[in-house]
View 1 (tube, rainbow, N blue to C red):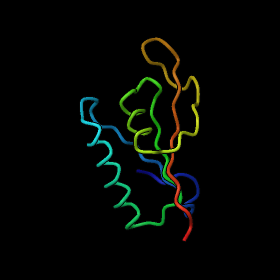
View 2: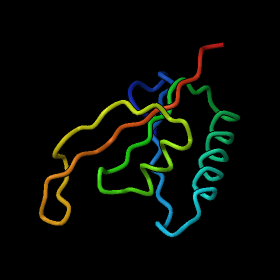
View 3: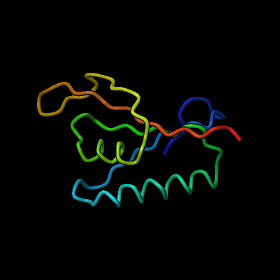
View 4: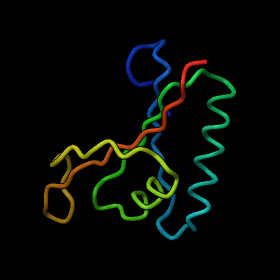
Length: 96
């Protein structure tokens, strides 16, 4: 987990990776616990999560968790000899 943007922007980037064979509920449970702990300690306006286009498990998790798919930044990494993109997801909370 790292801050993204300005120090007081309340935007964070989560690097989440479980083993591909982990059940889908492990991914969702881990994400929920991370979010719960983060929001208990900090004000959070936006949490971003990114997965490579070639990560079907990570992409399936993000979509099943209801994260907002924001788009793909094409060609930022090489996988199996091809240029591949990164898919950006987020969850937003309204200011209280």
